[in-house]
Image (cartoon, rainbow, N blue to C red; front, side, top):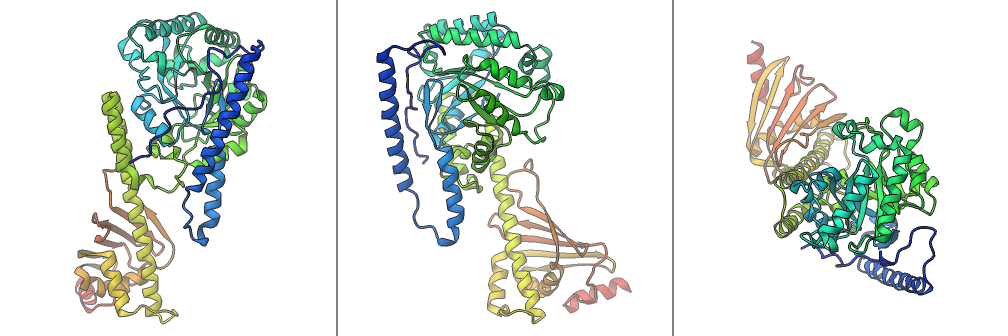
Length: 535
């Protein structure tokens, strides 16, 4: 079972005691805050020491370099940091994603190690209409999971009314809001055309006066309200609408306006017209942090698919934390696990993690579209596991073929024995294996079946597999367990492999438009078939 996460995330000062930047806190509040900081820092240090003591001490010396790299990554990502009024246990947080980050998935990621989460985007205009579909997205049913609500607003007055509505409903029909909403986030990053056409999202970055008014409205509300446990307020933004706004650095102007008003800004370093396959430009995160200084936390986002990526972003940009979006769905949350070493261990843990998510979905509820999305995510994880298993099978078998070739050429210090050859054949090939050789020049088509057939064709396979290879795998959209691959050989031949669930070769096809070794096929049957075809 997954290890349960702490039921509380660290809080330094209560949101009701937190002051607007520039205001004076009472001496008693300051003393309590200082004592709380020291106490929680001591607790954090103790927890960190305990965590390090529990690490596996049985690693071999050959893996020490990799282990040191992992430890270095963990030490950066597991550092506590300040997000507004909250002191969080680590520097990796879960991004708000539409039709993804419902209550169950947020809880799963928090249990795995995410220190903070956000809801799906909520349009303030729809919220004010009391649209049930919109209000259902504020599913802060689990108060132990630190969660902020992300709002899409068009004006300060709309934001003010939306915040007031949150307060009112938290005291009436949405009592769980009063315990589960720990922050408010403004969305200036959604690249959807219908959002931009409405003048929202990234389109608002070119309106600095409106941005300042929005920031002021949010900060004033947080200082006065007493209903919601708001510990952090901030915004998520892109570089602008297009390349021109990126060059004019409109995002830096927005960050300058956020200083002294917000607690954080999350920056996704692409503009709205960039596709996700275009690399994120992390240098803009570094510029944002230089402008923000120590008065504003900067959370980096974009192209983080492993814990090493997250640690590298912090090192290269100086950002305070890393927000993970696609990396969270691609690894089904394992990217938040401090023990994950960036290998595809999610394949081995997929059933365990999926089972936990199903339990949480049953507890908190799940919308059908979100359930389908998560089901597809786990299917892709299993598909990647099959792809990697088949790839590893080919690599191991290829080394066996190299040894076989060198044994035949008598150019090997440790030639294969008959027993080793037999063991390898039984390991790599199913007992009902079928091997087909098809060539157009010379024209021939022949099949071999069973382990005896493998013995007969083995010298030819060993000779064929020498040299450079290009391995092609099925895409992730393929059905579950696509146990197959195609290998393009430097000599012009192609090999297709189909495997069983036990990861043994059941079918191996060799296609040659012009076979490079027509006279060196080892068996009399193939030579006979070639002569018949030629005749």
